[in-house]
Length: 287
Figure 1 (spheres, rainbow, N blue to C red):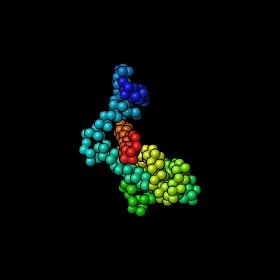
Figure 2 (figure 1 turned 45 degrees about the horizontal axis):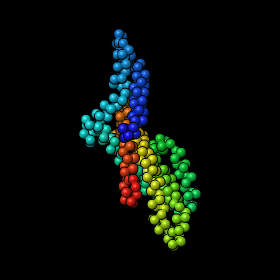
Figure 3 (figure 1 turned 90 degrees about the horizontal axis):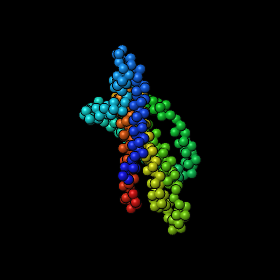
Figure 4 (figure 1 turned 90 degrees about the vertical axis):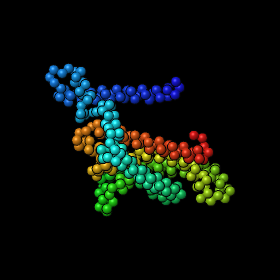
């Protein structure tokens, strides 16, 4: 009973959201279902039709689940009709961008902490960079890189990295500066070098800030990869799936792609959380 009570609030909210979803689908699809119904059809028949339209304005939860089941299990993984195939294309671009963001963000944070000039010169520009809408800059990046021969996964990875490096950089800067000044003074007393202070004090202390920042950055990288697929007219990826669904009015396909993206984001956060647990265990900490 104790474990069940922990999930009871989540289940209650989930049931409420599903109920509201059905009510919203019924209201939005009612006119379309009524136009397609027979003249002698009752309101029950219209309601049933509204919840089972082929091209509804708002698909119902069971229609989205059916579309996901079809896209995940009915086709081969390497089929262009497979939802897993499109999710893999987007996930690969997001992973590359995330790795670029982690590397660049950590190096930039180290420079900002140790070089006051970089702190004053770069931090304002880092903040300004996040004020530019990714929907506005993504087409420009794709076009510019395409003109110099960089196409495919490269533009998507760069946009994903651009969108996700800011939380990593700021989190790492905060972490590197979080060490106790008294401990730094103590190490200086024992003639510790800057490298020793960094490796034995600043770097271990920054991990408590880096991993939460990575949990924020991982879904952002996924968003950047999807947004980068939209202006290119990509043939593969969740962004391409969204475009195809919008072109042909297949709203269940659009919602299935959105839920697949949400599932990928959850897996990304879980992977970062697992890496943090492994690191904590390796350092002899408590989970």
